[in-house]
Image (cartoon, rainbow, N blue to C red; front, top):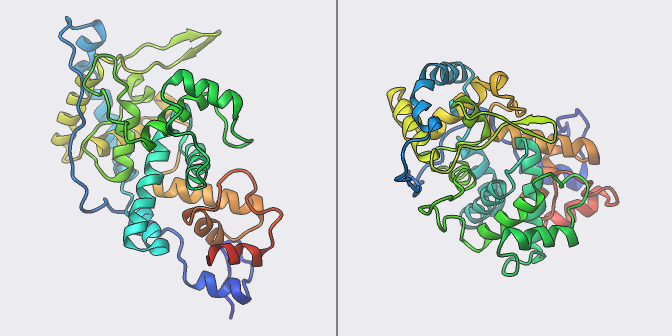
Length: 333
């Protein structure tokens, strides 16, 4: 009996031979990535007098810990346990190249994480990863946010990859590709969320990712922007204090700071307006793969393999004009 894809379609011929060698992400294997050094990131601690927000952070413990317990009951403390994703890259590319490509993917996810739920974030990451592998990014020319604004104005992302944060995406992607994502973290006004998220994705669970949802739960007031209330980021001088408290409370529960944050993030989603509902990053990647498979009428196995090997995107049709045999030929190179 020939193998079938997740939509129940029979797969035959060369395609069947290829797919027999591939497994999709195995969710029951969710586990932390082994061998990653667990280390904090540098933070700037302001010597200024305590602000009203900083003075109020500790009072938020009961509601934050309540969210964490709710999230833990859903398994959300394992959200960053990305060993299944890393193993999928190794399965396709071998140990050395698989680890390098997984690190690139983690970097691109972090770099494109501004103003996006997780599945669209992953789709954006696939676009920048593909362009980098094709040597299509001006890594050494886009060195500031102003440069990034000009770059996306001249080179807007195609349908499926744009966002209100696309200039910030380009800015951070280029920083990551130059290895400058950790520059200036110990200076006043440093941006902490993006590099912290990148570390968590790649398996370092010590940094705490304090996004706007965490800021809202810590009491940072929303601000009226163009007639709409919008959540605001933690002030730069409050971030280290919120991280220190979260790390302390995480330790009391036997969690790493990233596990504490992801459990709070999902456990308090209704309260802070989190739009992502995948129970783990691995599930979010699989969701992006299945969505793309449905758009392109390809099997999820082929979509995932094409993405990992560097030829496939996860939003715009990547193979609408290609035959299945042409895809298999590309995958076998």
